[in-house]
Length: 119
Image (tube, rainbow, N blue to C red; front, side, top):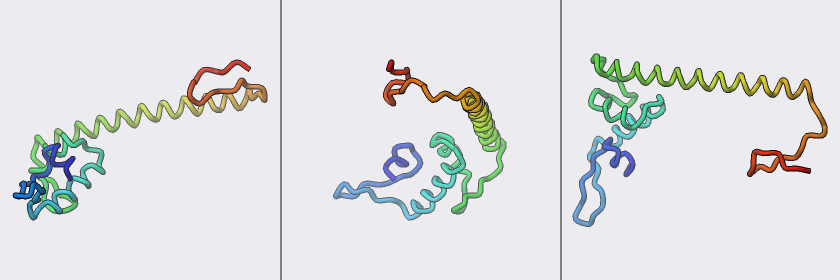
């Protein structure tokens, strides 16, 4: 919760003893934050979206600025997924090629050093 507070997502007062005193809506706010984090949103995105959030799930008001921000994040996620898919396909191709040309006498590899270790 302190992380959420540091990110400006959650407010707390300090009691005389120095302990944090969270507002009564803090539990709901944390649930909203966790749902939005689960959607791949950053804490910066969430700080922007929270004023438009209602309910635990949460439901978001569809104002144009909010929709633009979420569409932008969705495009970034799509780009990341496409990059990962290309990397996965390339790695699968390397595995297939290595299996076709398989050899029992590959040089050993040291896990800490990606370069082959001379035998």
